Amino acid sequence: MKIMNWKNTIGLFFILLLSGCVEPYLPEVMQGPNSYLVVNGFINANGPSTIQLLRTQNLDEETMPPAENGAIVMIEAEDGEQYGVHQQGNGIYVSADLTLDSQKKYRLFIRTRNGREYASEYVEVKHTPAIDEVNWEPVDGKVEVSVNTHDPANDTWYYRWEYEHTWHFRSAFFTPFKYIDGRIDYRDENDEDIYNCWKTEQSTTIELSNSKRLTEDRINKYKLLAIPSNSEKVAIKYSILVKQYALTQEAYSYWETLKKNTEEIGTLFDPLPSQLNGNIRSLDDSNEPVIGYISASTMQQKRIFIDSKELPREWSLFAPSCYSDTMYLAQASVVDYFKEGYIMPVTGIYVGGSMSPIGYVYADKSCVDCRTAGTNVKPYFWE
Image 1 (spheres, helix red, strand yellow):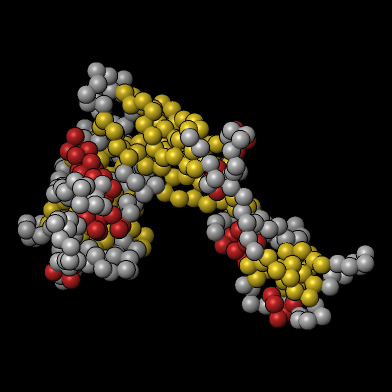
Image 2: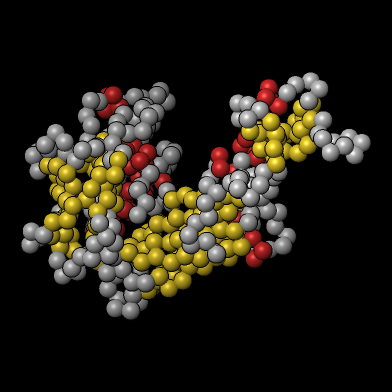
């Protein structure tokens, strides 16, 4: 499961709207000494649960918020069963692959390294219905991706989605050369591919919908995202893995408020920030604020691929472009140019039918080696 964008979560606690003021106002809370616990994640009833623990910080801080490391984290059932959630680093805690009993309620328990204890309310396990379809269509120069789902039992009503998207891309220049030990050699089959790479990103928006006002528990064509036609993502081949979660009404209300607070505030005419009421409490001090909401559900997922050949022919797709320059061996050596590795040879410069180059066209490493922006390891799921 994707961990929510930390800036959105941390910023929530300190958002104040400047109403009717021209002079900038810096509230004291921005420089306050408080460091409250932030809990991101959910209890996955049919797989590993991932929990992130962070600490709030002042709005003017530019560094990552502090991770809460060294905590004891447990998933607890009402009947006393416990499952460990083990630290992976940087405030991330992951459980084993679990199969939880849908007839029981569960909570998250946390004991920080300074001995303070926190726990969520016990929550029911929601069964998430399968995703019917993940579709895409070209709309106004964009690739719109949408999801369809329904619950035949008419028992879900509230839904949340996350997605993970991956795309194939290439460097701006292909090179047959490599610099090694003070000379330029030809690359061979033993050298890594630096022309073809893949990149993966997690969703950072909050995607919610409900069917409560409908006679049938069905969601049709909920738009998850729109990708511009000139985006690198769809230039060659693109894949999106959509993850679906069923929510209780209380959990939906929390995420809806979070969505409004993080996405709709920006001008004096936007809605006022809403009070964010989570379900995690300090067991030592009932007045201590804790940010987060823990729900429990199964997860459903579906993946699709989009090949650029399927896009409208009239679209102008993304093509990488980079600046290149030339160097001549009569004026400088390859060691002078390429030893530091910041630039790389692209092609040789030849004259008069000679087999030996008199120089090289070169470019920045980021234009030649695609690994600077992704990985050259093809994903296991790639078609």
